[in-house]
Image (cartoon, rainbow, N blue to C red):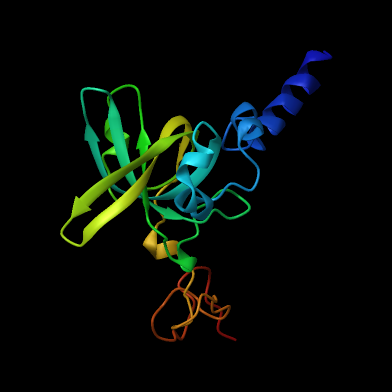
Length: 181
């Protein structure tokens, strides 16, 4: 009889669990940002870092899998915030081959791992320095449903509170019952 309240409490607390494991969060170097790593990468090698962003490419190599991620600052809920723009990319390194859930460019992720150094990569636009992060924990964010996104006021990052999900005003709301007196 006493077991039922304990099970209910455990189920409720499981729903409030952080996305990244508590052990990984505890080991992350407080205040360490992408910009700090790019300024002095050799100073931060071996430290745990939490970064997030958008997957722009993935590949499997003999050493394991690699994700190239466009870095975005993380919000308080560890969600990558693309409204502030990106300062560059980083590589998330896996010791094993990548599964197919990582083979979707455009997916947002949050990564915790150890900074292993930097790699210089060349592309059509020139050369870029990419920090290398050995993945310890990764959270794949669900794709946003474009039909359920709030309407943003053009030129800002503010949401229009009066937008009801349609491009033009409607005489009747589409859901619910219409009553005419």
